[in-house]
Figure (cartoon, rainbow, N blue to C red):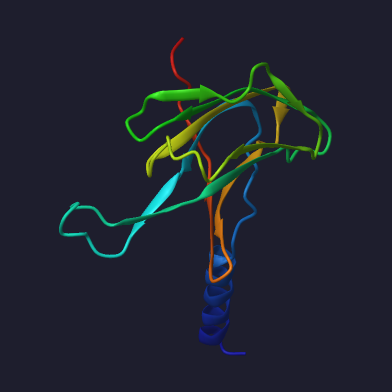
Length: 164
């Protein structure tokens, strides 16, 4: 094989190897504060000329806190629910809640509770005795009726823990 082709082949193989996705290392954690966006209602349609607001559809919210670690429990320390203005509406956990390995803890905001508004959120704090796979925290929003179904999911993101 001529030298130019060997060089091109080598360069191509190196380029392919460099572009192959590297295995991501999973960052373990022994605790976090998580921000989870919640919607009590959604705005849609045109703005009404008399009210100056679009139509609203109320939705229920099912929050799922899933321990993804196969060997170690985690403890949810708090699940604070805030409205659009950032006012604390309620603490959903009267006491810390332990979630066993691969277990799930659930919270529910009914469709009739519109107090959070379109910009509501949860701050969920959790801890573990040692670094573990962080939990997956999601909110399933739903409005299921005879003629239509509206479903969507929001996912929590880690934030800097508030100073105490």
